[in-house]
Amino acid sequence: MSQPSELPPLKAIPGSYGHRFFGPYADRFDYFYRQGTEEFFRSRVNKYGSTVFRVNMPPGPFVSPDPKVVVVLDATSFPVLFDTSKVEKRNVLDGTFMPSTDYMGGTRVCAFLDPSEPSHTANKRFIFYLLHSWHDTLVPLFRNSMQDFFVRLDDAFSAKGEAYFNSFSDQMSFDFILRLFCRKDPSETSISYKTFDKWLFLQLSPLITTKPLKILDVLEDLLLHTFPLPTFLVKSDYKKMYEVFYASNTEALGEAEKLGLGKKDACNNLVFLAGFSAYGGMKTTFPALIKWIGKAGEGLHRQLAEEIRTVVRSEGGVTLGALEKMPLTKSVVYEALRMEPPVPFQYGKAKEDIIIHSSDGSAYEIKKGEMIFGYQPFATRDPNVFKRAEEFVGDRFVGPEGEKMLRYVYWSNGRETENPTVENKQCPGKDMVVLLCRVMVVEFFLRYDTFMVESGTLALGSTVTFKSLSKATSH
Ligand code: HEM
Image 1 (cartoon, helix red, strand yellow):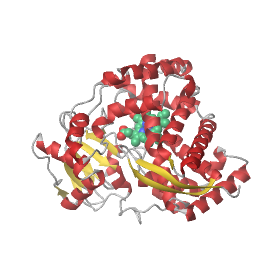
Image 2 (tube, rainbow, N blue to C red):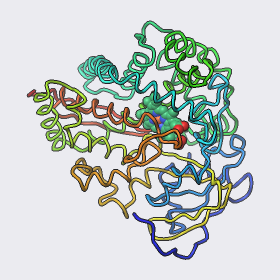
Image 3 (cartoon, rainbow, N blue to C red):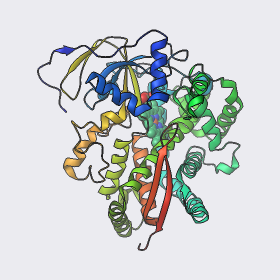
């Protein structure tokens, strides 16, 4: 949506924060236990008749020093969070609190740095270097890891008549990441995907609910959301992760030194990239991808299988060139990222007084120092921008008109039509992630004609269970 040329009158931002302690506590209880995430936002949009409003975001006391935020929930206001001239992105990766740097070996890693901090540039350059160095091995390594994954999946399915996707997917992502970052077979190391899981859980616990029985709500809230969990619980695990990455990245760490980063800081960044950004990201991305494609049904599966098998046959394999020639495959990946952005929360602190516009044409002023928060699934399902916004439309992004809509796909903390740079906070792994999702879809439809899934929700993201898997009848 373009910005209106004449400014509408400014509206007061609706909503309130309530009492200093009880307000955030009540909002947290609504968010985790009484309403759940979607209903938490939806009920307030309805109550205020606005996609911009004030609320406290969890965790609140005593983990967040200040949980007050201005929420933006539509496609027009949301991109203010990408404008690093207007918002500060210092220490806001996890929201209104910053986990202890003990989880990062004592380093404030790249994802917590604002682009105005000089080390952000050096770190992001280091990541661009890594991505470049992986260029040739990326797809073959991922395909290898997927072959192991399919063996496990088929075995489990034959044994039980159904198979839980998430744990096989996590295992596959871990194997792939270790092969990519460390050129090591995971079995040669002292860490496993459970090491990453434990480390992620401890630092993200203030944002997680395990959805316990109702009578245990207060207890869980006290344990997970009221005080940060002690970092010593993961100290020896972190040491193991660090040692694995340090020992197998001599060349990359040398390159980091040339960019002005100390080896220790660079290695802490490597661990975070592998365990949090890549593994943590894939943990929610892949289940969402397979869930939405699975639920779209046999008609779409037939079209995907046809496109993929025809191109792979004519190109002689799953090459980068072949992947470029699959418009429907590309589109379903973008559509899954639109329907269920893998990292649904984005934060930024206003660097100055800012006027924002929402999709219904209203304008609001956010004051310098206020925290802006976007819940992305509402922005990427904005009915003012997308037709049938709540539906998964497999071919939505096919053709020139469809491709224009990619500017409203925000999963990478930026528009899909823009690129990560040292000045912005867009995910440098953006193209790699989209590529891997395409390879995953290709591998699925080379192997199966169709499949049925059942899905649910998890502490972070979706669960997927295969209820049927029909092997490919043609190639
Ligand atoms: C499926 C996997 C991934 C997902 C879903 C994902 C998502 C994101 C998102 C949403 C952000 C913005 C966070 C914010 O500031 O609000 C981000 C930032 C970042 N991502 Fe990714 N990412 C993934 C994979 C990767 C990979 C493979 C790498 C690098 C190897 C990477 C490196 C980073 C870094 C360094 C940042 C911070 C950028 C900066 O400080 O300018 N990510 N990612």
